[in-house]
Length: 154
Image 1 (tube, rainbow, N blue to C red):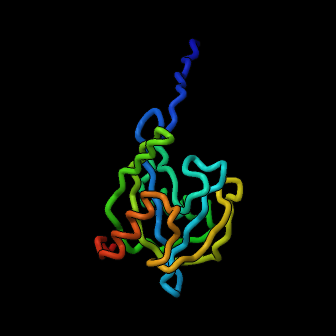
Image 2 (tube, one colour):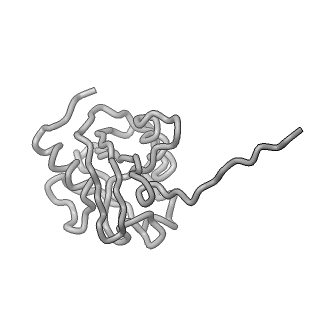
C-alpha cells in the first residue's frame, strides 16, 4: 500500500490570505457591551479593546463559530438577536486583512469570565457611547452601526 503524503503549508489566516472571523457585541441587563483588552499573545493589536469573537474554522457556519468562540473566551452561552454589516479589518502595521462578521447578542446562560488570560488582559462592560479610544476597527464600526440602527434583527 502506498501512503499519500498530505501537503502542508505555512498558511496563516489574515496574513498569507484574507482571514474570516467575527465578533459579537454582547449586552448585559444595563445595555452595556462587553469588551476585552487584547494581551501580548493575541493574533494582532495587543493592548487594544475588542468585542469577543474569533476565527471561523473550515466547514463551520459563521454564527456557529461566534457562539463557539464566545463560549471558549468568556464562558457564556449567547442568544444572537442581530446582524450588523461586516467589516474589512485591514491592519496595515501588522500586514493583516480580516473579513469580520458582526453580531448582537444577550447572555442566555453563564457568568462572564476570562477563560483565555494568555490572550486577553481584561474584560470590562462599557456604555455603548463610552467605549475606549484604543478600540479596534471592527469593534468601532460595529458599535457605530449599532448606534445608527444599521442592523438586521434576527
